[in-house]
Figure 1 (cartoon, one colour):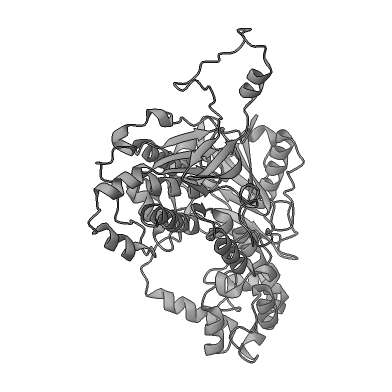
Figure 2 (cartoon, one colour):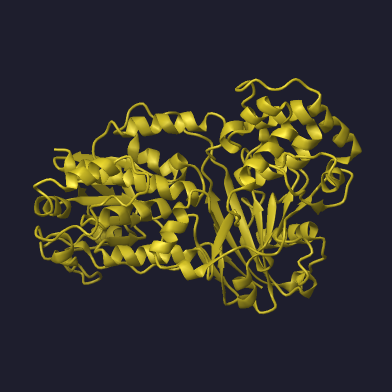
Length: 560
C-alpha cells in the first residue's frame, strides 16, 4: 500500500508578462475580446452596453483595457474565473497561487495509476451558472450525472443502518408514517412528528434556526436522526446553526400557509414538481480538475501569466494602484546570503538588469481570491470596518483504492451519511458506484472517499500521519459500508486537507458577508472573491466571481 498526501503536481505556467504578445495586451488599436459583459444578470450589463456604443469605442477603451494590470491573488475557481473575466477584455492579468497546483478545493490526485477527484467531485446545477461555464470551456460532452442510487444513513441509535428516506427536504419528512422514515425514527418518533399537524402554524420569521424549528414541530428524533446528518454532510454544520430561509427558501411561508412543517415540505415539493427534471448535481468525466485545466488554458490563450508556488504576502498603495509583495523563495534567500561572484548561483539578470522572479508587482487593480485567513492578512491594513472572522471547519478527505469484490453490488448505494456523534467519519462516498467513468477507469477496483471534520470539530485524522489516517479511514469505511475490509485489500490511499468556508446558510453569515463586501467596495481598485464571501460550492462561487470581476473592470475602464 502507498499513501500520498495532497502535494499536487506542479502546474505548467504561461510565459512571463514580458513575453506577452503586444497584440494581446498592449496594442491600442486592438479591440478587447469581449466588451459585452458576458455575466448573465450582471448589475453592470446595461451600463456596459450603453457605454460600449460611445464615440470612444473601440479604440480608446481597447487602449485603456490594455493599459491595466490586474493581479489576482489565489488560483482557486474564484480566482481563475475572475482572472478570465479580466483577461478576455484585453487586460494584462497575473495570477498568483501559493501552492504548486491550481484549483483550491477542486483538485485531482493519482492513486494506483487512477486519476480521482481529491476535493469537490461535482457541481450543483441550480442557477445554471456552472453548467454555462463548463459549456464555454468546451467540456459539454464530458458532463455526466451521478449513478449508484441513493445514500444510506449509519449510526441510528437502536436501529440498523438504513437508506435515507425519499421525498424529504433537508431530511425533514413530508410524511412521518412513510416506511423508510419510520425505520429510522421508530414509532415513538413517528407519533411525536405527527404532533406537527396539531400545533399552531408558525408566524413568518418567528424561528430562524432550522434545528429549533424542527425540534419544536417534529421532535428531537427527526432533528437528530434525519436533519442533522444532512446538514453535517452538506454544510458541515449542526441544524441549530442553519438559517431556515437560506437553506430552505419558502419553507417558513409554506408552513404559515398550510399549518404544518410536513405539509410545508409537501407543498414545496408540489411547486417544484412542474419544473424540468434533472440531477441536482453533475460531474465531469475524468474529474473536476478538467475545469481547472481548461480555465488555465484559456488564461494562457488570453495572454495572462499564471504563477504557481508564488505567495503574495503584502499589499501597498502605489500611485497607479497597488504594489504586491511576494514571499521570498528559498532560492532568493540563498542568493542573498551567497558571496558575490562565488559561482554557486545563476544570477542572470533580466533586460532591465534586475534578476527578481519574486520582485514586487505593480498593479492597477488587485483581486483577492484566497481563503479567508490569507485574504484578511492582505486586506486588514487597507480596509476598515471588516466584520469579525467566521469560524471555518478544517476537513480532510481520505481516498482509498480497494481490491474488494464484495463492494461490486454497491451495498450502500452511492454513499453514507452518519448521525453526528455515532462515527468518527462524517460521511463516505462510494465513488466507483456513483460515477461510471471512474468505475470504468478502476477496472474492477473500488474507490471510496471518507470525510472527517465538521463545524466546531477538528478532523479526527488531523493529528495522524498519512498511514495512520489511511488505516482509520479503512476502518470507518468497513463500518459504514457494512462490509469487513482487510488491510491487505488497501492498494493505495490519498489524503487531502481543506479549510471549508462558512456555509452561506449559517445564521448571521449573510449579514457578515454583506458587511465585508461593503467595506471592501470603499477601497478603489480592489475586489474580493471566493467561497468565504459567496458561500461554498461552485454554484455560488462562479457567478459571484463573474459579478465582482465585472464590477472591477467597469471601474477600471469607465470610472475616471
